[in-house]
Amino acid sequence: MDPQDAATHFSPRLKLELSQLEKASGDTVEARKPVELDQQSVGRLSRMDAMQNQAMASAVDVRRHARIGAIHAALARIDTGEFGTCEDCGDPIPVKRLELDPTFTRCVGCRG
Image (cartoon, rainbow, N blue to C red; front, side):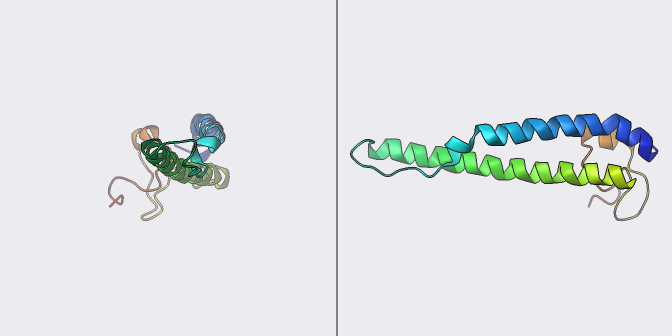
């Protein structure tokens, strides 16, 4: 797939996913805030549940930001014409592999 075809085919998909991830990150800001440990207003088990929920929301956001970084890198590769080329061996990455995940940077042989 030549770079222009890649940009036409994968760029809209990547941009849509990026906007969805950024929106989801903004929507979960409250869930990631530190839990207040006011013993007068919340019982011990409720505080523990709140702390666990906060930790899970933070972990999800870490994974979300890693994916956002991978998408930005893929969009940069589209802009520079490097998209679809294995970063290790320089061979083309099969389109079916990119259809699975357009942020892949390695061919099947080099994925490693």
